[in-house]
Image (cartoon, rainbow, N blue to C red):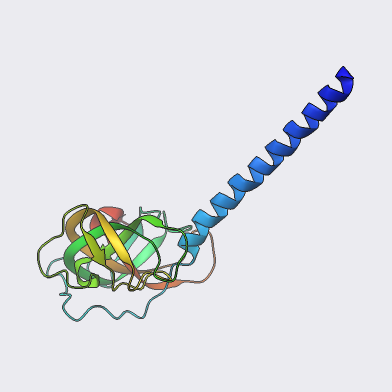
Length: 181
């Protein structure tokens, strides 16, 4: 009888470990799906009231290396600058307007992509409505400002280090996330 109990316990442990591993794998896939649904390439269209930077560290047409890892294949990629703008960049957390899992600490949404933001920088904890459309369900979503950074943001073109199609007019990378080529 003890052997049957021991065998039953061993089988149950193996099953629970297997199911736990599957659940953990599914959570990782869900997290990566959040970034993979990001619209990597953009039209290059920027908000009407966004002003080009007068003396950016990285001028339009220049090259830089991306040090950010907002998505797979970005870190270490060689980029060509396609736009440079002075603004306030925000890290935000939001639940997609189309439903689904909450997106935490999304980098970056800029001042001009926040409905009725005005010209003053917003404080952490402020609830806002997003006009940005970087990811499915972002536009119209209610978000919370996590942090703000007054900086130059860049729109960049790059080829992912993981291979695949060239990304054009990606919005946004901050000046601190770039380094000279």
